[in-house]
Image (cartoon, rainbow, N blue to C red):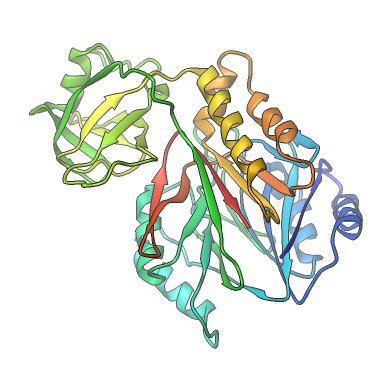
Length: 390
C-alpha cells in the first residue's frame, strides 16, 4: 500500500482548491488499482461548496468528518481541508454510508454494511468508521459495527467542529455531508493494521473510592449507593446549585468489574453533565460494579504522552502511513493555557517526514486495545490519542 496526505487552505474558491489538491496528488503518489481517501475539514468548506467540488472531481471514494483542526506532513491549521489517500493493488476498499441513525444504530449499520459488501469475498481486515457526534454515544457505534462485522478491528472518530456545542459538525461521504449518518470504509486483502494509543499517565488519583452501584450505559445513577449528583457535590466536584466548573477536564479511570486481565490501556471516561434527576452522564459506557478514579488533567501530560507515542510510531518498521485521532478535550485543555496548537505541532514536527500522515481532532476515539486469539477488543475512548498504522 502507498499513502499520501494532501491539503488546501482555500475555503472559498472550489476550482482553486481542487487544483491544489490535484497538483499535490500528482507530485506525491501514483494511484494503483484500488484507492480510497479519508477527508477531514472545517465546516466552512461544506458551506462554500469547496468540499463537494473537490470530492466529486477525484477518482476515488472519500469518507470522513468535520473537525476543529488538523495536521499533515509539514503543515497544520484550523480552516483547512485534508485528504489521506491510500492506494494498493493487493488491498481493496469497500465504502458505504448508513441511513439516518436518529432512531437507532444497529439496524441501519447492519443494512448498510451488508449492502456494501455484496459480491465481495474474503474476510474483512479492518473497518474505519465515522459516526456522527449525536444522537448516540460512541459505544453504541462500536457495538453495532461489531455485530455487523464480527472479529475485525474497528478504528474511527466521531465528528466535531470548533463550536462550543458541536452544532455544526457533520460526517462526509463522497462530497455529501450528513448530520446523523455514519460513513465507513472496509479493508480487504493484504493488510495487517497496527494501533497505538496515548491516554492519561499513571498520575496519582485525586479520588479513588468511587463505586458505581447503579448504572445503565452512559448513565450513572448511584455512586457508593448515593445519588450521583449528590455524591459529586459531597466531594466538591460540583456545587449544590449544579455548577460543575471544569469537571469536563477531569478524566475518570474506569476499573471494570470481573476482569481477569490488567489493561495496558485503561478505560478512560469524561463526565458530560447531570440530568434533572441527578444522574451523571458520561461520554461512554460505565459498567455497573466498576470503580472510578479521578485523574488530574495536566496539560504537560498531554504533550508528554503524545510525544512518547509518536516516538513509538517512529520506531516501527514497514509503515506506509498513519492516521491520528486525538480527543478534542486534549486540545481544549491546551487551549485553556494558551497552547492550543502545541499537540498539532508536536505531531507535525515529531513524525518522521517519510511517513505520510493525517491528524484530526475527534469527538470520541475508536480503537482496539488488545487482541485475544486474533479477536480484537474494540473500544470507545475519551481523552486519548489513537493511531492507525497501515
